[in-house]
Length: 314
Picture 1: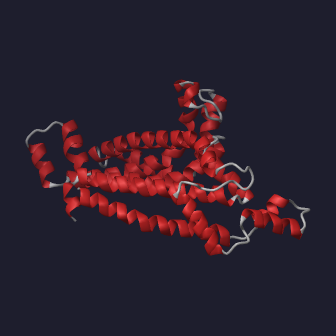
Picture 2 (picture 1 turned 90 degrees about the vertical axis):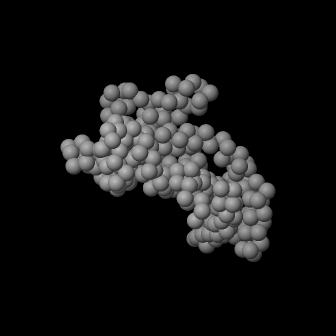
Picture 3 (picture 1 turned 30 degrees about the horizontal axis):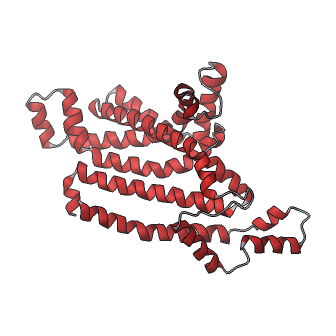
């Protein structure tokens, strides 16, 4: 187990190096000059050149990358070009809202999706199965912002059950915090419910056709232990895989959802930084997201070993 984890950890290093090069290169090769944006419409060429020099944008590309990469290794993500605040501080100020939204979304998605997928596999071919798959197809087809606006219109504006927009920190009260997350969590989680439910159903059907499942049924094993202890446990690897993949989709979905529901999270920070071409913020957030995604995939790989011990010997 230890050697397996070490191999996966060593594999993280080249991945993050490639991600860092890609993030830094993509932003600096894109058209537009942040110095001109900071200087304003009436700025002279001398003013723009002075701002570029103060930001270090006039230095060679490789020098800029090495300075930035060295700072990232030290935990220094740079300073915002517009606010002058450290990027790490700006991220920490908004991380609670984003983590709350992402965590609540995954909890809602996993609980609903696995439950629906197991029920659909148990009643394969029935009306329940077709209804679950219909909801799955619809949920994966409708954009997040459409679902968000529909939920706001019916549940907030018409029924007044939930707040229309905004976010409340946990420190303001657990109930108020949860009420502000219900709609965005369901809006963002619907696509993941669809994806995970379909994979759960397919994997469960494959396992339920195995000989040991027929033997368990012949021995009179009750339905609940049969589905959960025998079928779901052996079908868990593909389900865990697709949950891990869902994290990558969640990163892009968070940006849209935070804009729809006016949540002051990291997604909104990225959108504002893109409009102003604030390089340090964009680079810092992207490298943090990439690091989180790589670590989650590492956690999924390690989890495989506990689900199926044969994997650790491959």
